[in-house]
Image 1: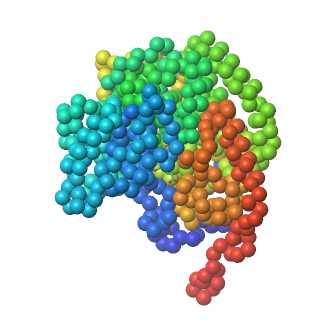
Image 2 (image 1 turned 60 degrees about the vertical axis):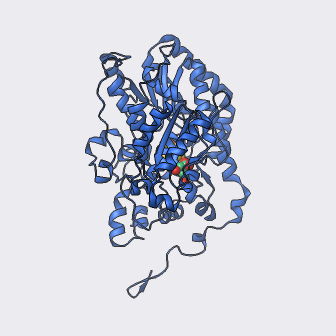
Image 3 (image 1 turned 90 degrees about the vertical axis):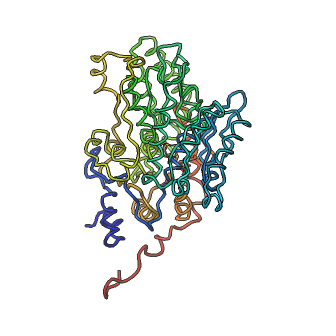
Length: 531
Ligand code: CFM
Ligand code: HCA
């Protein structure tokens, strides 16, 4: 009998089939990874959900830093697209946050012909004079790379002229195959020119950096509330609610917490080599995952007082939500979900859904790499292609003056097998036999997955959201959370369950009939026979 995976792939002919077949995996065994092809060029013509390198660098990693001007050098559309659509929030410093502004050089056709450097210099000057930022990040868009504007020398000039930190990022949209390349470029820039330059020394040994947390819908606020309540000092956040000087001082913390593995693992790895700081793969999305994370952090710091406080806070928070947790578990248990987002989030939300008895039957990432699916142990087997080699690979060395280890080698080795230290297991190990995983999913595959798996709810992106809603399937947009959040830790999990419950039970769904209930999904003929 044809498997569901084969049914999805059957739509394709020749070369497209050959390309897509290795991006679609149906798990043959519970909790056992299978090889998947990822981080490759998309097939032209397929309606995919990915964004570009510039979006990953400017929009995702650098954009949320609230006291820096992130200046888009390019046409206004690229500036507009990355302007607050992501709902990354910031507290503001003395009532001021620059993230509500969109800074752009607004390149026109004449600039493309005659060059845009003059305009860029003027834009930097205006931004510095009007906003007095801590730094200016110049981010290149596609045309800038094509016409060859020298953004590096403009950054150098601005530093000398205004005495302000100015860093250029060659993150032209076409570099790499997706946002992922932009994450890497932004990580490199922060590592080279920012981290290690600050002097905010933490006042407690329980000092951490929160890496890969972008504060969508206020997620970081809730996580920070819990961490502070336990007694941790959050030295810096990368980069939701991010502050330049704090990021510059990140090397002074004792542990890096990695929430979104995909977008920030480069910094975590490089800081380990250069400064000796270990990283822990955490997940504050999901009640059980938050508890696991807090206990693993306490195990790392190995302090009796901290362990006791961790358990107290867990009990306190659980007591407050237990009634709601039981209620929503009863209401949602047994439901099936589909989740497709860009990177790490698909895995994180699978864990949160499991807290409420909801199984994720079909999922995938837009642009994650094999390690996000299969676990970091596959990294040595990943062959780097030309698209990846095009992105600078930094090889930092041990900084003799700043390198320090918080725990000794014996403790490290003992902890290594027990907690997710310097390691990420990937999503597949949390999935059951028969689950479908699609890499760089497209509209046709999403439609097929909907009709084959009939999820009760689908967590989607912006572009595919409406197509899913029109199919009569409740859908929630998981990039910006629509208008909701925070979804982190204990209270956030209840917010999420509440919103999911509302979505699934909205009366609107009863008024819609999915097309595949009344008409065949495929019609046509092959040779002389109808299909
Ligand atoms: Fe990390 Fe993100 Fe994600 Fe991501 Fe993104 Fe995002 Fe995302 Mo949209 S950093 S990989 S590049 S968790 S913007 S906050 S929601 S695709 S799953
Ligand atoms: C981005 C940002 C995005 C877009 C979401 C989408 C976000 O990658 O440029 O298009 O579905 O979270 O806002 O991922």
